[in-house]
Image 1 (cartoon, rainbow, N blue to C red):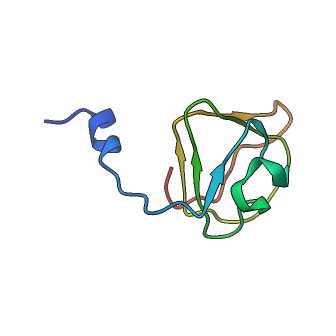
Image 2: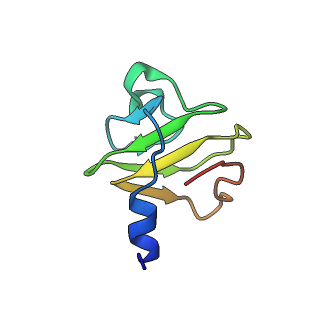
Image 3: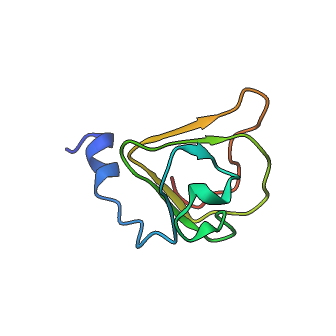
Length: 86
C-alpha cells in the first residue's frame, strides 16, 4: 500500500496557468509569469527556490496549487479557503 505522500505525488494537477517566477507577495503582479495574479480556476505552481507570501484577501476559487518551493501565510490573514485541490 502506498503512503499518503506517494499517493499525493502521483496527482496530475494539469498545466499551470500561473507560475511564480520570483519570491515575493502573492498579490504582487511581478511575482507571476505574465504579470497576472491568480484568479478563479487558476492552476498555480510555486517552483523550488521560490517563496510566495499570501498576505491579503481574495475570494477567487482556485483549481490547484503545486508547491515545490514555499507558500507562507501572513499571521493576520486567513489561509486560502476556496480551492478544488492542493
